[in-house]
Length: 103
Image 1: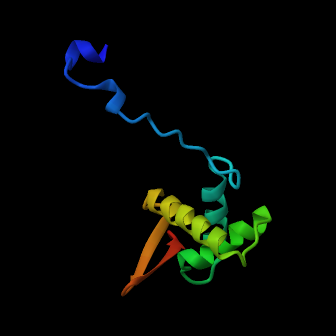
Image 2 (image 1 turned 90 degrees about the vertical axis):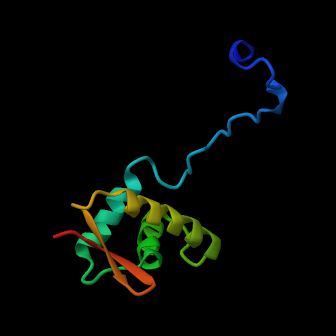
């Protein structure tokens, strides 16, 4: 089919599509619910690192493992960035950013 539209393209030179696997730590939709629960009960805005620890504890992950904390922290940041403005708010204080539940 590709040769019909681009006969000069070498099909062997095209890299195959990467297959992405879901992580086994959180089912779809579970991490956002955990984060919203933590943010609703937090007395002050929390950093991503502080927000990463509570879902890890609830899922039985080791919060002392730096690599796992880093990976979960990335997931937490991406999850919070995707949330609508009506649910969470980003509070910036210079370079550091913290998150809180929207009022």
